[in-house]
Length: 168
Image 1 (cartoon, rainbow, N blue to C red):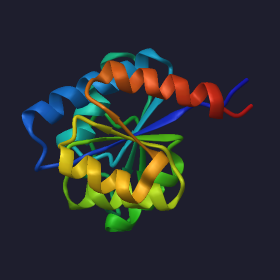
Image 2 (cartoon, rainbow, N blue to C red; image 1 turned 120 degrees about the vertical axis):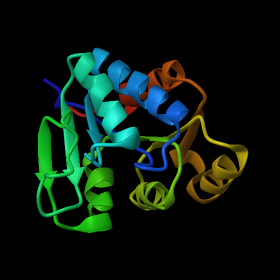
Image 3 (tube, rainbow, N blue to C red; image 1 turned 180 degrees about the vertical axis):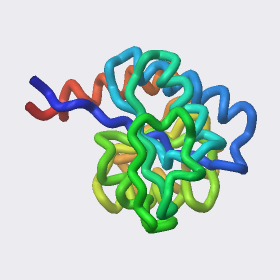
């Protein structure tokens, strides 16, 4: 039996656009429907909350890796809440715990997660990003960075990746 696949969904909190949040909800739902686990930064707003809300609606499991020393700002949709007290240092836990990372929206914390993922040799899917962002991360991440415009493309890319890299 294979272990659960953790799909890290990284994106901005308070700076997330309504479009980012809507797509994050759909992404979380799709992750759940494929039997994968949604892992985010665990907070109660933005891409993190929207992805976990979608996953919960799809009857999926959600994990929130929280920056604070308590879970007061955790999303109500975070079923498993990992309290780190590490602030932005928790981004490393997000990245290293994920089998694959999907990035939706962009902010400073999100950019740091992408950089950590590339440095850690993790596969990153940039979802619905602008050309400047894509060019920058593909330049430093080369083959580790993939690009998708839709949630359906992301699911297809994850399945392709897992077909080759899933471990027993």
